[in-house]
Image 1: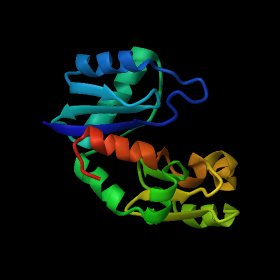
Image 2: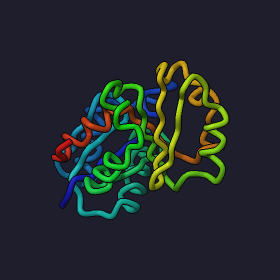
Image 3: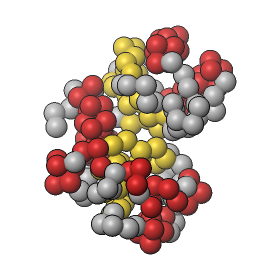
Image 4: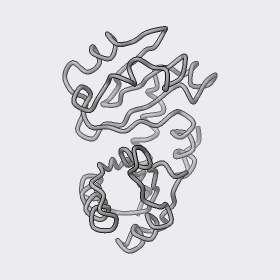
Length: 179
């Protein structure tokens, strides 16, 4: 058994809601150990021996069955999460303004041309880099003001879900990573 970080795409945004207490109960009913949630924003940490792909499929099916929600789940191990943190191409920005750096974890990889398309949309010092299948964004004026954020879609990028650097570090702490 090892920790698994489960990220849900679009949870608690746009009306897609599943109470975190009920998410934990669902995880327990699935036989996952020590389920914990972080905020009401689609973050679940469990202990499981299942491979990531199998756990993703099981979680997605359980979310559909339990809540009637068809949401994408992305599962990462602590080792994968540590590599995501180490690969951040915006470390100074993340330290100074962690809410303005976003790591977008992709379900099936980054679409061809996505990085170039995002760079073409960037305004006012915004930046985007791709490292090991993760898109990293720097939003100097905040995500809500971003031209990239307003225009980039899963059709352009691929299926993924973003977490700001504060959340990335809190999830790391939940699985025992030292940051």
